[in-house]
Length: 188
Image (cartoon, rainbow, N blue to C red; front, top):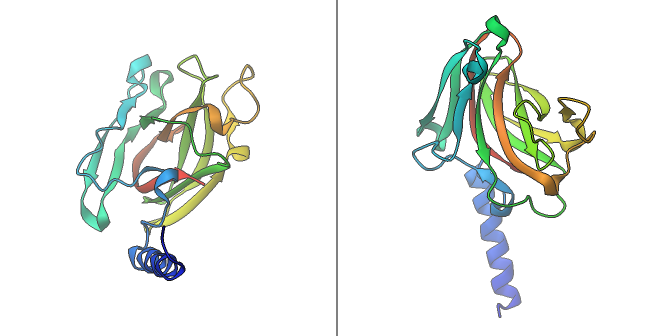
């Protein structure tokens, strides 16, 4: 059992760590990934080539700035294509009270998307989507679950936090060169 002074000291150290740690402020229970390890191994890259499209790209890791994942490539809508993405299956359901997705990202001043899959997104082309516009400097984005749009009618209007099964960072829907970097992603 910690004394009151020990608890206050611990709280002060945590606050100091959050202040000095900058972008590493997310509580562990809400964290999906902070890319501190030298890999993106838990993230699976794939493109529209799985359905005949011609987009190409890659997912890489950089140790700069404390570590981040980088999704780069060329998105083409030719041959009914139009996406590249990295996706991670969630090991556990989000914590109780989750109302959205939080990420820290930067990139080439374009719009990218977070795609969510749930227990109700059975078919490969089903997902929930919310966009975010990156700039060259790191920014925090908070995407409420209520802002995610379903990809089709059979899905519930809004995804349920408890039903989330995977999260993806996606370059989607138009011909463009993709370059988005994710330093941290989690729930809030």
